[in-house]
Length: 242
Image (cartoon, rainbow, N blue to C red; front, side, top):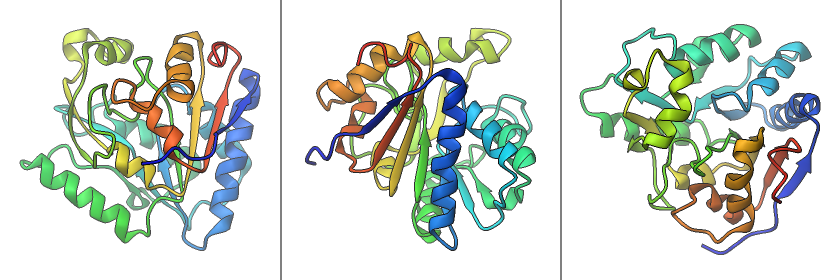
């Protein structure tokens, strides 16, 4: 893979990120008759979803695909990403739940579930705009350091750092799942356009490594440098090392 054009990086005040990101999503929705949007969970994209909800736009023509899902949580668990998407996206945006897709973590054959998810994305025509956050260890979706840069949707083992970062959503570290299903880095790079949202000082080093360091498995998010249509929206704290 060859390095592509430099990303568009916009440093915005915290209150500006949601509306700016929503504008990009609304543009993507308007550009196709049946748009496909990839959605991320976590704290970084929350202002985006709030801004979309306040926009009053019609989202009924779109299909939505999640980046990842935990393995090992029972159906309906409040911290499963299926439930997070229900609370933050499906209900606020008035979406048809059947239009929002996640990889199935309850299948006996998890890799088969991953392969079917890849086929579902392809059958929808591919993702037009993929929303992303970044982990403080540089993970993208749940692609942890050390994995292949051309990976496809698969089972991933979560690092202790990632589990500790997500512990705030659970009763204890022991309650945080150790495995997940995640879109691969190659899957993410297939999207027509990427939107990365980074907020907070704890993301500054990861964002610097992703955008200014070498493209390396040690920083999975560095593959973003290989995509020709990347927009980064970061608050001053997250952008402080750029």
